Amino acid sequence: MCGVLGMVAFEPVNQLLYDGLQVLQHRGQDAAGIVTAEGEMLHMHKDTGMVRDVFRTRDMRNLVGNAGIAHVRYPTAGNAASSAEAQPFYVNSPFGIVLAHNGNLTNTEELNANLCRRYLRHINTGSDSEVLLNVLASELQHVIGSHSKLEVADVFDAVAALNRQVRGAYGVVSLISGYGMLAFRDPHGIRPLVLGKHTDEVGRTAYIVSSESIVFPNLGYELVRDIAPGEAVFIGFNGEFHSRQCAEASRLLPCLFEYVYFARPDSVMNGVSVYQARLDMGVTLAEKVKRSLPVGEIDVVMPIPDTSRPSALQLAMHLGKPYREGLIKNRYIGRTFIMPGQATRKKSVRQKLNPIDSEVAGKSVLLVDDSIVRGTTSREIVEMVRAAGARKVYFASAAPEVRYPNVYGIDMHTRNELIASGRNIEQIAIEISADGVVFQDLGDLENVVRALNPAIEGFDSSCFNGCYVTGDIDEGYLKHLERKKDSNTVPAGQMEHSIRVDSLRE
Image 1 (cartoon, one colour):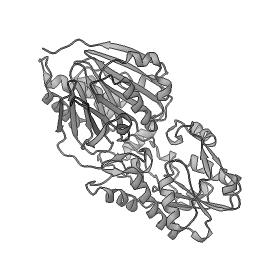
Image 2: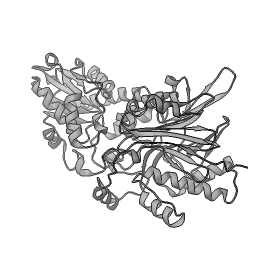
Image 3: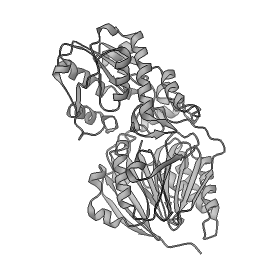
């Protein structure tokens, strides 16, 4: 669950891309990278770490140009951080292409084998994003044939060919040296991708593409619309805008977990205000709490900051209970769910949150969180609140039970990682040391989001119901993922260089 960003402007974009990545930092804390285009030259800097740590003044000075793409990486396999898999990725033929990808492919091994056999292309990392880049490059090479000039129609034909081969989730931004920026979204619209623009004082229009709309106002751009499932847009370096539907069949089936946890509340995604969706989740969750817990015993409702605040606020209001901020967050600790490794997550919980004893002592507390995935964080928090003197601790989740692996870009690769896998509600409560646990009903959650945009046909709710919208996931695939997990580790090391690309245009 990474963050991608791309811009074509009429001014240097290095600082804009940096500022945009800062806004997208919540989508990935493992690595960051920026590539800018200056004529036929592509300038790249990427490394492991937070955005503020990856880029220094000297790096920013080298990122010259009026167009660029950027990426923050989320460790989808829970492996050690590696700059070899930091994005964007680069390939030198045809033309010179860089690509940044949010999502996960489900037929990576098949694609990789085809690239090696048919196109004699070598993949140097374990990243499916490098595979995706090489599929795009191969299809571009195929559509232009022996010609040296690339037309916009060729770009869209290449994306259409890619869509016929690739399965999984992908929101992509890419630069083709000497030509422009390409962005496209998977035919199911699983991963988000939004388009924005800015018109300057002389009437020139600059364009921006991002994983989330919240980037736009921070950079002085306005939201235009979501890029549609299966759609590709191409913006030439001269500012000309083109778009085309490149999928034979497309449906809007966005990831439901974006609304629960990943997206910032001030984003608008697939026409839905994330904040409003989380408020409405609190209303339906309150009704479930009334049916499932002894509401009369609850003295106070407390959110587990930050994501659950809107839901907890509405839940407290509908239960008629006091809402209190009883857990204080250290804002200099990252999001524990997306930290690689259980030991790292467990250690960070105690550093991240601290209870206010006076708000907890002697009370029956209902804690509200956005979700319970592995249970590590939930157990630590329940024990922390008990140690602060709580009489009873109940736990409510704004999301349903996470019982199945996610194969589209969220780090839930194996069932044995998930606390709800193979356990009922009572057993989950025991595992996290709570006096009672309530989960949102999946139907209620889907209805809440769809009510805000009826054009949404359905959702990728696979981590809740085990139904995978791409139709290619079976038990054998899931077992293969479990065997493969944690098998690829690449030593870390900084990567920084400028790439000279010879023009192939006439």
